Image (cartoon, rainbow, N blue to C red):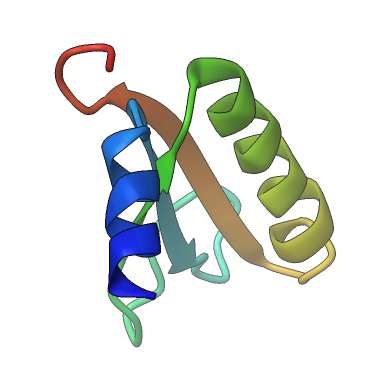
Length: 81
């Protein structure tokens, strides 16, 4: 099992980085005083997969939650493997 995971990681060329925070009650986007922003990273095979995953996570997980915001980006992990 470990070897399979390691092999898949080698094929990952991008990181999907998502940032989340709970928005304060004001009109302008700002982090609520009772929470802290969080960053999460997920290995992705290629840029297209990374972009599709970021859009899917935003639309299906974050947007349905009232007053919760999320941003994401795809970052090249180094050399294309």
